[in-house]
Image (cartoon, rainbow, N blue to C red; front, top):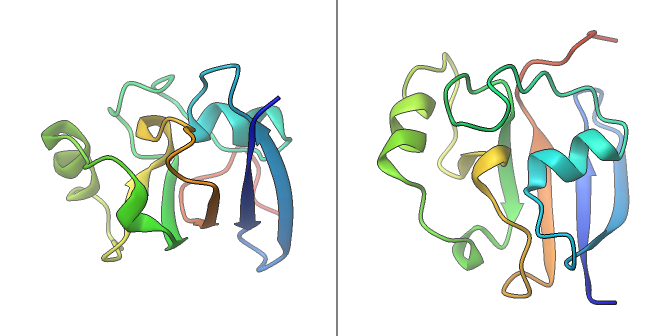
Length: 111
């Protein structure tokens, strides 16, 4: 089974490296939620709420370009970074063998 490595830094600056299977065809948001991260994802992955905001720390250039809808939603956030993305809009593919991210969006229950 093909996988990619994802290094995740949470809101408390804890880092964890996980392996994400590519065979499921899921988004980064779906993987994060399935891995126990309490991302709100209020809109269910439609790029309408920005609660799944992440900052790409490594390999941003290997991702597909953000859509206009995604860019418009990112523009509504109080804090945006040059490599900000909505995790619901990032499909996990072989094009990105390793991805490092920092969770920036709203969580279901802040720790």
